Length: 453
Image (cartoon, rainbow, N blue to C red; front, side, top):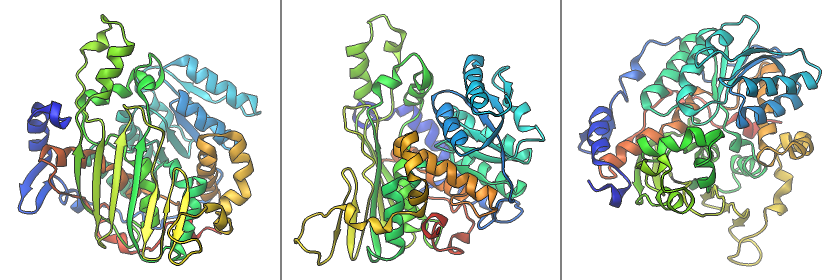
């Protein structure tokens, strides 16, 4: 297989495909798809409420994303009792943020890669927030749940199917929630359109589209922050490395894991070009990064089929000059919404076949944005969605509510990453999704966010 044509490597495709999958008459079946579904469990976590309490929070990862989340946590009056980072200066800066708002200085854990294990073992921590490089999400979440804490992890929650199942099994066995903090589900447009979809204004939903198209080239080659680790994934993994920002909101519109589920998908990738071209133009000839070999195709496109017959397209490109775009489309038998810029169309509307303004539908604004939108926008954080997400998560814990998202969403929305690699390795063959709910996806009909008053 020629990686210059496919954005893939022959070595990886042989080795990883043999490990992950076996060919069947209908496409590719990923190893462990059903075996893990039979693992012993303590019962589903669907519909399980939090115990009502004002949670004491431990935060692992106090870099750029961690301190951004910390600012939103403090604005929502969260109790921060412990902070962990491998760079002590970053943890100390985060500690000063907590002290500045009048809280007691949280204890710091900065003694190496595994000092988080001491944080999660504390008796005075109820929930652990994980804002670290991707490869640490699963071991940290598992450690937190095993020690009786709820685990709230940044995206993606997991990067292999095995690890998706590890999160599900651990959550069920420990009776602790594992929630992926998909902030895009809490955006103003996303929550408004979700309520419209739930009210049936778009009719029978048929199609959705999401994406993560974001020019990250400068950040990927930075000598700080995510530049220290995120570019490495482009040297060792192909496929859609970051599916959840575009997929999560569309999954909510369609009631995925709530009356429908992902059934199978195919993946296709373009050649790899963007990172090679960028480093050639911006790095010195003797820079050691010139020797890196990137194997991830620049644009990866997924097509997902659901059990109810709907289709969802998901795109990923972070290495080319493109305006930021999550696409965010949902279409049904009565109308459609498309974002970037936001626009809406309904059958029979005045003006003929032209898009209308979403502003005309502000009466469907989500109650969270009505109540907290002003402070959310002042804080920033991706247009305010970060604060809305944090506020709602704390609200669910303080009031003993069922969380909006759960471990099954974390697993299903993360799964397109490894499944896309299996599909690409098999020549874009269909790949079946695991049923992480073990058949319980019909127990509920809609995301909690849609019906919140």
